Amino acid sequence: MNASEPHQQGTGGWSQFGSAPPATGGFPRRDTIVMEQPPPPPPPVNEPGFSVGRRAVAALALAAMAIGGGVVGAVVANTFRPEPVAGTSVPSPTFKSAADQLTVAEVAAKVQPTVVMIQGQSGEGSGVVLSPDGLILTNNHVVEGAGQGGGQMTVKFSDGKTAKAGVVGTDPATDLAVIRAEGVSGLAKATLGDSDALKVGDPVLAIGSPLGLDGSVTAGIVSALDRTLTTGPDQRQQVPPGLGQEQQQSAGTTIGGAIQTDAAINPGNSGGALVNATGELIGINTAIASNAAGGGVGFAIPVNTAKQVSEQLISSGKVSHAFLGVSVTDATGDVPGALIGQITAGSPADKAGLKQGDLITKIGDTTVDAGETVVGQVRGFKPGQQVKITYMRDGKLNEVTVTLQEKK
Image (cartoon, rainbow, N blue to C red; front, side):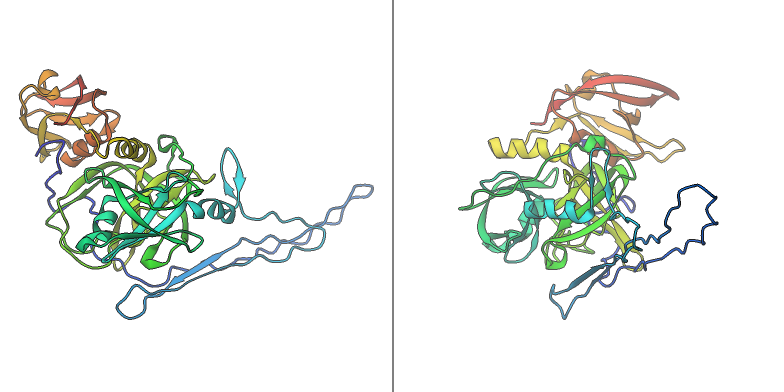
């Protein structure tokens, strides 16, 4: 396997399809809990008094329902806020950020106009507006699904208006694409954040069109960073999020550096926005790992990768990718890593002195636990970029700096 090509997946690893189709139905309800305060002791003489009130935590109940064999559903969301006791000021719940203090509702209202629903003859998904004149970022598999059968894509905006759309460029290697809505202007565009600044535990919102329900918002946190996702042509359990019917998946791909979140993501969310507490775009929702019996987790392509790819697609319609020049397999011994099988003559790996049989244990700052990690990381780098590779040879750890080339 070449480190610039899809990793041949065995039985393990993340899949864009998940281990089983996601189950529709209700999400667990977290009921409002009102904490009773004990009565205060009598105030001492000559000291000012104070009033005692109650504080309640707002709770959100969300239910989704599918009717018949189609993608018809309903979402009901209710927030409850108790009336404060006279004389007591109770602040509304906030979506905390170091730079600002916004409520979840304020973040959602800010971002929803920048997220669209993409519909086609045989599939649907979501997208994020990049420019006022209609450039929209989405997933490659959303474009492939919506455009099947020669059908034209339709974009539905948050205000209910629609427009036809055509493809500007696609990049299957990163599962990203850019389309352009026709005859539009003055669109609200997304504000791009910095995915490199994310930390595990940061609050996020996922916005898109799950199960055909456009403009849906779910809240969660960043539950992990730097995940590697692999999709393979031999997997056919569930259609990638965004497509409307089961079909054989096209050539597999490996995506490195993905953001993992527990914000609910379902089919139709693909290509939609993952935003931080100030409403900045920090990821493009792209995949689900789910178990029908126990929910699942979602994954997003970091916005820094999406920005780099989208700029190339807009300017030239294609993307240049970095090339290392090795084929790798998963290590089977006690030390995890990626075992080098073959090295392309004259490649960056060859010039750096890497050899067949070397065990790559780290690439850049990322620990390598399988061959797919090397593939995903290389795809996240730029041609000409220098990358430090840590490897084991004859039982000893070594380091080498490789200058990546453009894949021809």
